[in-house]
Amino acid sequence: MFVLLTVAFFIALHDPVRSYSIGDDYLPSEDTLQHDASEGNAKRQVGFLMVGAFGLMMLAMPGRRPIQTNGLLAGLIVFFCAWLVLSITWSDDRSLTARRLVVIATLTSGALGVAARMSPREIMHLVLFSSMAYLLAGIASEIALGSFTPTTERYRFAGTIHPNNQGVNCSLIVLSSIAAFQTEKRWRGLYVACAAFAMVFLMLTKSRTSLLSFLVTLALYLIVVYAGSPRFMFACCVAATAGFTVLLVANGSVLPALQQGILLGRSDQDLDGAMALTGRLPLWEQLIEYASVRPIQGYGYGSFFTVEHIREITARQGWPIAECHNVFLEVLMGLGLVGMCTYAVIQVVGYAKSISYFRGTGDPRYAFLGSLLMLGVVGGLTESTLLVPTMQTFVQFLTLSVFGLQALPDAMRGKVRGIDTGKFSAPRMHTTGGRIVPFPVEHT
Image 1 (cartoon, rainbow, N blue to C red):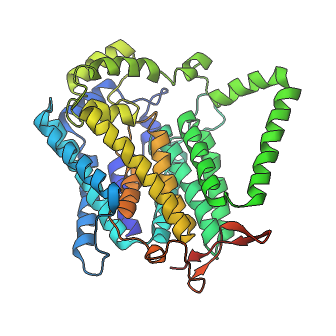
Image 2 (cartoon, rainbow, N blue to C red):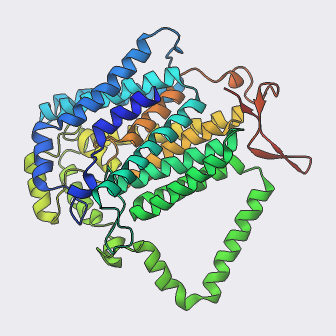
Image 3 (cartoon, rainbow, N blue to C red):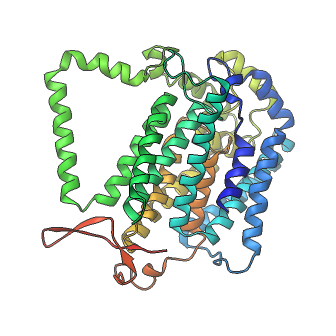
């Protein structure tokens, strides 16, 4: 199952010669964007159809866990999907919307199939396995093509995908490795090595948005998991104190260092460009003008970026654009305020579910699933993760399927706080009688 899913997404999203064929600005050409909008991308269609077929096969085979609605989250998901499908009736380009809906349908069926077959532990290992495979493939690709030149000034590690997407891929490796280190009894040193290895290449992507999304997500994950640990709280206080001390003592040299940190060593733009989110702020201002024309229902899912709109916006902004670079604005353009508000509430309820499941079971893997959702939300503030589906989009759908369309875990049925210590073992820390003791975690 791991190999089939990994190969399907590689076919859909990855290009072995990406680092060689892409320009210095790491942007696709306007002709490519217009071609994909008008005719689609055959390779992506094949890959996503493989994901959808795999999901349907998993759902059809006997032995899976039943799909069932699970509270408010399930109702929101069903309503959002219905609104998504209905948008074809008011779409500006129905053929384009239909193609986008097929992609969403394949990802949805794939996520449902995986959620019905895999435990949280297996999902954690799937994310680690697939993301590490993509990272290693990217390294091998750049070495083979001679484009792996990390010492050059304008270099950004891309591998087989865009550097921003590669940054997300590396973030998934680090998060899944940390969760595996906490919950697994074997190969813990290997998980530490995987996290350190991926962190190096995350920095080499020089993707500010991916790094910031990862840091925010990691901080929230650690707070959720270790909120009851005095050692963790003490470490946070020490870190905060050290940070404020540095600001006070080295006030004159902090600002230049901070500016360099914001640029991440990139020479393709200055600080003003970075603070404008690499051209995203002017783009969002223009897109809001279009959104105000159809505020309630939008232009139809995926149908705003027609060839005409790509030409108009590209000419005005000065760089090739075929997406909103913000998932919430993207949903607003396609599905209006109704769709955007529903999408936002789904993310909030889904993350709350992850915390509830974690507290009810003591299993950090549920907190890890919530971190996958949060990584998509924070990263979605600067990237279109729904209109341009990626592995990150899939793991978001997978997380929502687990929390909204699967039965409660056994440990939470009838008693949220009661945990059978005979079936669980340890990584999360909490306090008992002044001592730090581990929370139990379910064996699989």
